[in-house]
Length: 381
Image (cartoon, rainbow, N blue to C red; front, top):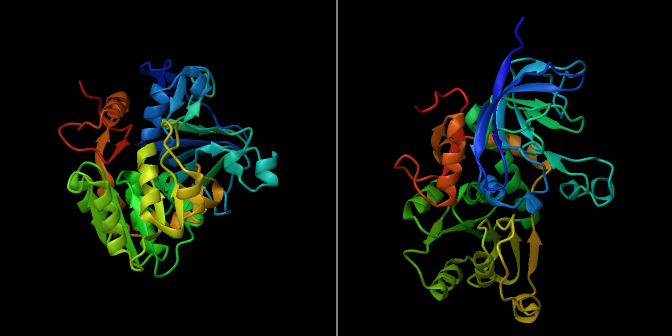
């Protein structure tokens, strides 16, 4: 009997090419799960990883990327009967995977209670030597082999499209727990990419009374931000003067003294610096966007921090709690997640998609918000 094979799209070297290979499908070992991938979101973080040096990535190539994954249970290893929170699991059930794997033994996992800082952290979606067993270790493929004993996966009762948002939604949940938004607050969400748009939607659910969303280039993104729940929007192309943007925030904050909370989802130092102009004295800035190094900015510990008495909090990655809290959010139809999806592409279009994202270009003559890789789609000829 022939061994069944499936595809995985692997990055061959730093700044290299994505190459589709075929590998034998594993039979799940005890405690493991074989997941048939339905969709994988194409994320800007993968652009940074693609363009980064081997030293920055810290992995031996080829590597498997793709971490915003939804799929169904193809096979269960011995002893696997439930998901992470104890719900019964069977073949065919839809699940979402938490890509980061934490050791649950180091200081940060056990004492500091910040497992996202785990010293032995690794992740599905940035896996080394991906041409070797177990092969299926990233979301850009036909299957994911959930094999590490510290893996966390959750059963999902919503669609494949909405389930594919569980990882970015967990990023948002983490930032909102830091933000501690209260009724009556004015919140500025800096950025209108997928994370910014999800944050805009969730700020209202978290209790914000007024949400102001910003975006740099495209007024159409601002229309989408309003659909996601923004009360007011600022588009830099329509309001290019930074001083006027600050005045707009102060004039439209409910307290007239600036935003109570600013959440930055833009990966530039300049965007973070502008957040300091938007926040009121004694307010809170939550930094999410600069997940990778983007350079330095001028910062005065006196005038930017002490004199204003603000809190600046870095919200890095996510952990199991944030995914569990995300489950009801991805199922909440008040958040029009499907409107964020602008493209469905086959497995062979991963590199083309990442290239378009990196150049802020259109894909197939359409502006990109969120691209979903669907391995069942036919490849372009």
